[in-house]
Structure formats: C-alpha cells, structure tokens
Length: 126
Image (cartoon, rainbow, N blue to C red; front, side):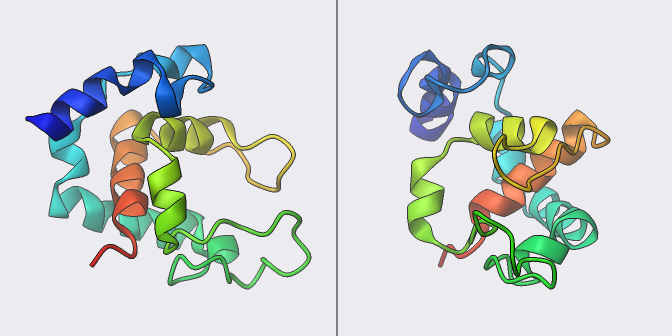
C-alpha cells in the first residue's frame, strides 16, 4: 500500500515537480510496474528500440553511444533509479529529452510505454 500511495501522490511535488504538466498527474499503474510480465515485455521493447544507444545490458554502452553528448543513461546505476519517478521516465520516453540525443518514442502506446518504464526501473535491482 505504501508504494502505491507514494506513486499516486508523487505527482504533487518532489521528483515530479518539473515533469511536464500533462504527465504530472498521470495515473501510475503500480501493479503493472511490479509485474514480471510487463518487465519482460519492456525488455523486449528496450532491445528493439533503445539498446542501440543504451546497450543490451542497459548500461549506456550501445553501439551508437560513442560520440553522444551527454552519454546515454546507464539504467543499471542505482543513483539514476533513485533520482527519477515513473512519470518522469514515461514523459522522457514519450517526449524525448531536450538537449540530448534521446528521441521521442511516441509511437509506443500507453501499455508499451508503461512496460518499458517497468523494465527500466527494474534494471540492476538485486
């Protein structure tokens, strides 16, 4: 219950304070984020769309990473995971990240995007 509550209210400030307004109050599907099936589907999407820059191990060392500035995110870094919330990751996937090579992946539907968020937030957890 605590995790679900924190996910529901995290849009009110804190990590989501500077998330674009249209994502700030987005309902976060906590059960989906915790689902092994969603994470597996997210990994498949990651390998298809993201690994070229972020690497097959999600460590930021993809074959297109060289020369990108800033470097692609290392999703295995616990500091990254602790510094972001699911709404922020969802918005980055949908909108891209200004000032970086991270493009918009607005071709993914909500379910696909949440599955990718579920995978990214689970990478490197023990």
